[in-house]
Length: 167
Image (cartoon, rainbow, N blue to C red; front, side, top):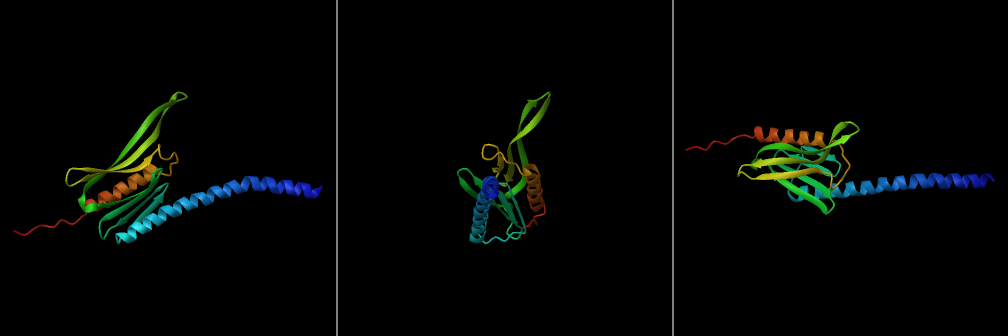
């Protein structure tokens, strides 16, 4: 009779922990693919990063020497990799799209999208979509990381040495 209880206990423990471990392993595999893509693109473009942040489905790295940012993001359609030359950027700003919802006599703002808008010298804009609720509902300090990278980009753009041409 003790053997039956031990077998049932083992089966219950396995039924609880096996799915938990599988979710952890699947999550690590996705992060590993993202890191591999980041390293591959960095190696291809000969970038070495002074600052790098990994959160949610994003990896962003800054190479101050070449004044470039590498942005890699996991999306439903695949992995997106963009290189931004900060010598072309005049300023950066955070765009936050929220939806206001009324819940039990109070209103709450629900984050829908979070983007970095980069103004370029030629008057164009480049948008980096850092978060989209259509891609993933999970949030991991999205606004904090967006503001951090906005400040980093603006500090690199402001302190870029200007070269005066001689006449």
